[in-house]
View 1 (cartoon, rainbow, N blue to C red):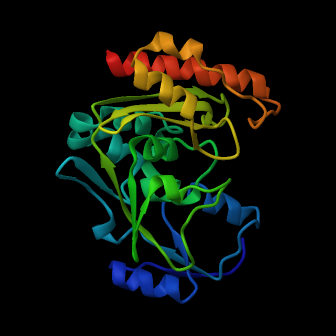
View 2: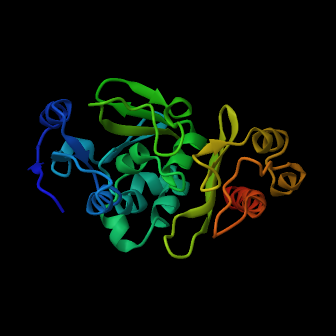
View 3: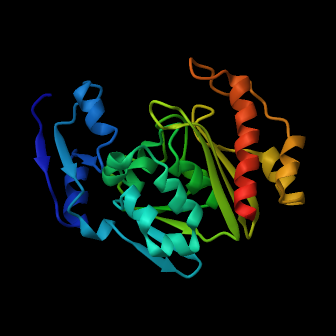
Length: 263
């Protein structure tokens, strides 16, 4: 490791000031600390958000659940409001990594990092979530760009994510055995605007699938998935799975998610 300044602000105002001055925000550290050890990242100042209490917690606001950016995966999994109104999100959080990762990793950190195989981005995109930052509100459809790229600007911090409560939803993930990231994960949500399907792990970033959404809009049933063609040309192909295999996994996981949502 190398020398750096470590700051632990206790208020959002203090944290924002430090980040605007060039500090690097640290959430759960599940990606950043590993990157620093490998010298892929070398920030001069780390701004640990762990003591900023206003960034944690879950509340219901009308027909939405608002979850603070520093809320840990294990707390999303166990929260009574999430389990009551959005059990698919609680189940998703409970399937991230292992117990140690869930005890440290945070919702905001995962969304900001936008790993192409992360689980939370699929939930945000499928549910039509809104990402709240220190300066604005960004619709999930406009937030996620390519691999590790988002709409966040320099000095901007995620403060919370608001998730509209769907009629029904479920997440199905085929795990990569070693990392427990999604080789393919599909989040299906039947919303007031119609079905939304978001896929993670299959390509260079999370994406919605228009064909699956159109089929489910006609009939929200697992058997309609078989009628949809999945284009493998832009999917990942690596030592774990070919693009064609991932295309088939998208259909399998979508069918499973729809079955679970209907259960």
